Length: 390
Image 1 (cartoon, one colour):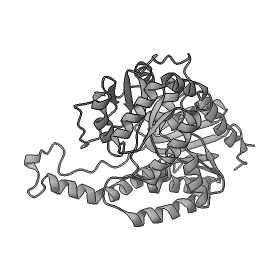
Image 2 (cartoon, rainbow, N blue to C red):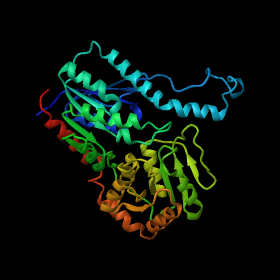
Image 3 (cartoon, rainbow, N blue to C red):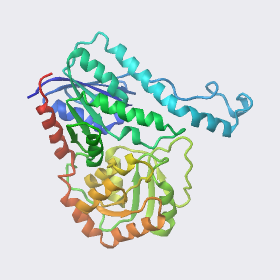
Image 4 (spheres, helix red, strand yellow):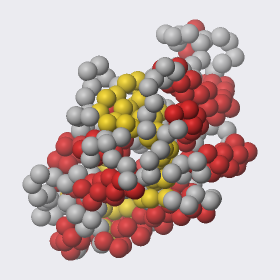
């Protein structure tokens, strides 16, 4: 049994905004482990909690055209809007690989003279290769945490089928070195097992329960989509349905991806806010939208954070009818489903929740503990306790 060990967590996301990473680190620290996080964009003076430290490694700069501050009028001739989009479409896959490699190189340099850690915990494939190297160097235990089905995501830029096929093989080869693989849904766990990974555990992206019982409205007044506003979120269907759902309002809360165009005439928009701010909005409005397009295997097997945030806030959902979401929503009667891309189906799903709102509230209340971080964190701590000595 493993207890009280030094854990190195590697993640290429912005640490301060990655709720899964922070919750896992906190749960392990509270269980007596010492956790050090290396990610991106850690704010000055940022503190996670006792037993946890965090630092940043930089990735390369974003994909740019011309010099900083250069306007469209001052760009080199021949690089019009269409040309720029084409160049970006062609270069994005290679750019992603280069920025991820740059981060791994920076972290390897930071750790060159480091004392060994006993566990190396790799969050997602873009840290796995480095994590394997470090675990070998230190004779440490390796844990692989797959937040997504990495090589089956919907990605902007030119298609890269060979990169995906090679990547799946490489991920499986490297992940077999891990003592344990963690992931976010049963569907992704099955895919990883099919690829030859024997010990795959599910730790869902659930939220801690509120200090006091949720207080949703007696009837819904609005739909809230809280998350990134961009491609792949099926927001065209949301916008198309919004006018037909009046007087129930539709609110999109989150940051808007650069270059993403959305017809906002029938919806309201709001700036992103804290987890507690989303709690308040959900309990004021009454229904959470959990929307995704049916455009990739990762979406079909995903369980978005928004689903579990709705459970924490105590409100029903209207969710995309995708396999993993369908299983979760119907098993616990958390809300209704609509066919992705179909605005009429979305309207019908919302009206069904409105008609039996109290019944769906009962389903959410009944699932509150089982679909909470208090439940899932126990599975994480227990999994660490089972790890053999490195």
